[in-house]
Length: 330
Picture 1 (cartoon, rainbow, N blue to C red):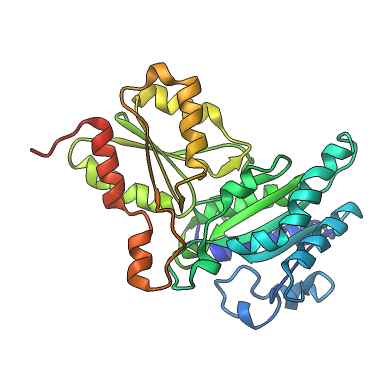
Picture 2: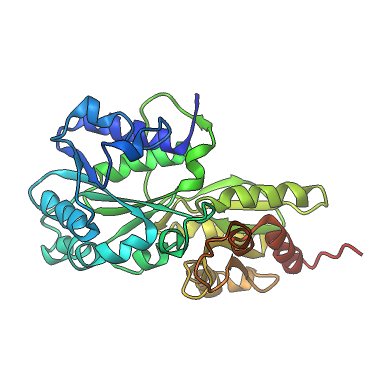
């Protein structure tokens, strides 16, 4: 095992897949120049190793970057393009939603259109609402797109390698907060299947379903509650589409309670889909109403104190779990 950050794990996945397959190339704003000079950033050093034909700095046009990916995949290449921040998905969405997501369907499944759209997401950097809004539910709502959102460096590496090898378009979302904290990642070559959730912590009393950076928040809350006799089972989705319904339902049937935790805003967030799934297919197993812990329906503040107030934290999750389990500290 090696202790590396998610940014370094993504870089390893990119480099290994580019060495394995000459049809893989990367493109995006600044992927080969100054903004990625830090060794913890995902494309650090790749221009030097693979050259400008396979590491392409692009103009500042998300629509053009996405169009490049669609055109390259049509011609048999495997592009991995970066759209930087999650809100910029709106600028690239015409090419991604109206073309990438629909081409295989329109071909009757006879043609493949392999491409990966890497997106940075997450609040916590004082970057303002134009850079920090989480929009994974937008991508998940579009048929034809796979949506991956890992919460650990090891998962990021294995899932990105699978995404690059997939014959369908994949939206791969990386929370920037995970770029800076090392964790254990296998040194050998490995992949993780897209569409398989992971029970990161077994528990008997309540299921917490989460993904991306909120996985850490879930672990903090579970540690506190364990000292009070409440054992939390943490299900890390890792992939939103396709959704691993079986793992979610199996966990809820065991615990009888569900709390969904995500950093995105509440209304229309992907957490609502999880709650609907459980209500439709495991209602008889529930011992209490389902709960959601999310960001409020507001643009992400730029002020650091307000931004911290905006993001869901372990205190909110602990209270939701106690409400769900009927726990009283009195």
